[in-house]
Amino acid sequence: DGVFCYKFHTGYTKAHLEKATRMVAFDMDGCVIKVKSGKKFASPGDYTTDWTFWDTSVVPMMRKLYDEGAYLVFISNQNGVGQGKVKWQQVDEKMRAIMASLGFPIDFICSTGTNQFRKPCIAAWQYMQMHRAPNAVQEQSLYVGDAAGRVHPAAGPRAGRPRSKGRPAPGKAPGPTR
Image (cartoon, rainbow, N blue to C red; front, top):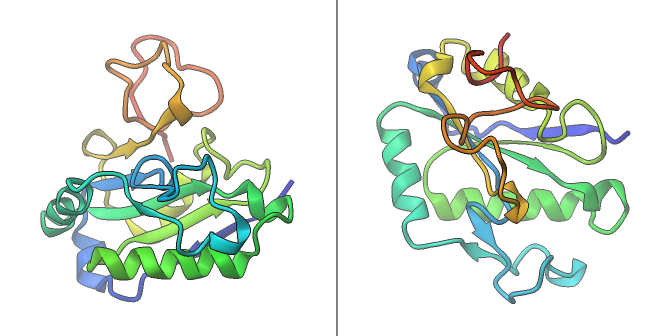
């Protein structure tokens, strides 16, 4: 089933976390970063260095959200770890490099297999909100993902909101619940 791993950024202050009324979660691969070599996935030998930001607008946009007081977190599926293709140490090294390149705090949580922490399930969102952004208001919070290149029929009013398996009935509040 895999496990979930997380890395709390030491740069977050207690005051920032307590004041954050907005949680913004990002998918990492294909959303914030992309494979620099153009391959679908970085090869294990280049895993920690074969990345670049998806676009030049990514870092300034994320910085603006942080400066406005939002709590930022990466929520990522890292099946390569669970399948033995990539070592956790490589993921950790890559995350350290991305965090350093951003220049502001962001936390990281990932699933390494098929469990309730794997996207599109919402357990990772709920865990990080409970432990890091308890005052985040759902209606002000959002998830930014790449949908793995899929066009999703639920785009539109639900776009950018975390989803559990399946689609909620029309009229249900967007985002996860506690």
